Image 1 (cartoon, one colour):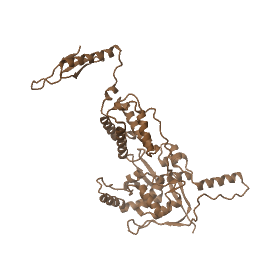
Image 2 (spheres, helix red, strand yellow; image 1 turned 90 degrees about the vertical axis):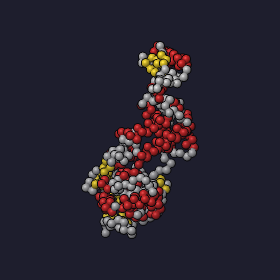
Image 3 (cartoon, one colour; image 1 turned 30 degrees about the horizontal axis):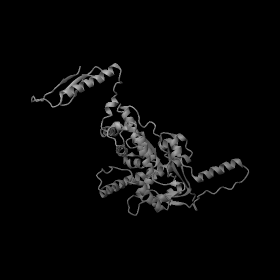
Image 4 (tube, one colour; image 1 turned 180 degrees about the vertical axis):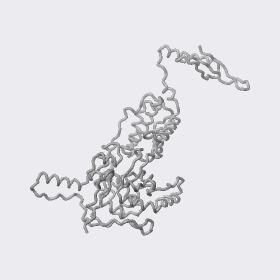
Length: 445
């Protein structure tokens, strides 16, 4: 039987509301607060006891933990989810990166506003509303990948709630993905374009481009490199799980000439000086990198675009566009063109699957297709002289180009060894030992 009683404060005054006790369906004695009226509290207590009695007799299903969590304010659960992600939500139990955490917060806040979520109960049977919201983004010009990212943020939140019994079922289980085929395809930069870009760029950006072309590191990874990460003895860069995309420590081999250039550039301290000047000029409250190996602009693709214009290289062609990430595409394509086996190419690109290396990053150049076509012709017509096919976009002339890496007019970088003139057609990438290096064949004098 339920029991109704009144409690008193320390000074002996009775509290305004009555309280009651009852036995729940598990046989546990529970206490709740009623109303200011004793009669209404007694009715409430009898109703609560009768409800649990029906559960004990099997007339009602037992309550679930998700039923209690469904009434929690959505903002409270969202804060709990973000706190978990910032602590251990990343790969291998590592925290989310600052950028990923910021995007998760922004997208989930957008979903909260779009679906008018006040509690977790609002996510029940929300699939039609979610699809309608995504169609609205699509009509506004959002790409398929952006739509999938928005959906993934909400779906990840729902899965997290299910793991903690805050929700019973996944409301987005039947949500289909959008076509994420990119509208703009990145093309692989040619060897001639690389030389033109390097010659047209300032010294501190030239060394950045050299490292990107010869390592395939992403902009964030290049920005995170410290001087102590350059291993001259092993000939490469030490990578740390705190800032690599795959959240694993690693080592990226580099050509000997790039290691030499990096060592000379690091000794000048120019990268730290540029960062300090930029931070002071912009009034940034963030900490300046302590000992950066390279200077990476805030918007590397925007800076690269200016350097491409200075070098007379088109940003967009029929084969695709060039942005900073296209430097990684060029690196992977060069590794494949050397004849490296698939496992080696995957390891150098630090990809989780070979499909990502071959189907997303590797590119086939038109000149390479012509070479293979002529090789097939020699097998089919071994006794017939075939005239080589002209490539679709063959450069006019291919003179030897001198590529000095010396002190700039501002004297910011000490003079380094000068690369002798070499034929651009002889520039190629090869895999030697554990990593890919560039081989620049000297032109016969």
